Image (cartoon, rainbow, N blue to C red):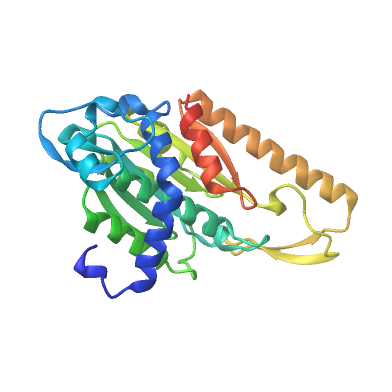
Length: 294
């Protein structure tokens, strides 16, 4: 563990717990439909790590395995050729808590699992976090410090975000920092406008999984009577008749159409669309997305 974080006991505990949960995800990352992004066994020996189901048995280091009492595999330089980039939206609309967890909390947890899975697979990872501004941006790189830096920034993201969403800028920055084909995870509710062109450009050179975060209100508005609703991104206020059956039906149909349009856009441009609800298990959703792939 890096000296930089040795005094942050809470972060270290979180990382240890996430490592336990992320082992299956690490397996899915390496053996799923994106395994072609791994270039295979290289020629420069880097060290050893714990055996993960799906590893080539020919890479087992039998000497270390005998000493330690459980399987270890040799790690070669090219096992680090897989590059992963996280793009996480922590704008105001992601912070609204209509269920036990907000969209942001679920997306942050999923992002942390991916970060640990990358550590277990010794592959490079970078991240871009944004609300109304870019809060954090680091190009893909593999080291213990990089893993802990991303986790540190992730768990310290401001839950009082800057107004607006710069999803488009985040996607442009992603295209700028990625110098080779990478696996890109985008976590957002995609409530902002003007990001489509940049997403298309990013998907032309990378494998992109777009996770649309949804909560209960995206499917059915709660019955509060007539209430003033304030849009989290724009600040615009409007009076909504939430007790009206017609309003509820129109709300449901509107959101379903938006969701369908988003899916069709993604599929048309080679982007993998994944719905992640706030009541879902993020680990299960991630595993299924990686195994299913295209």
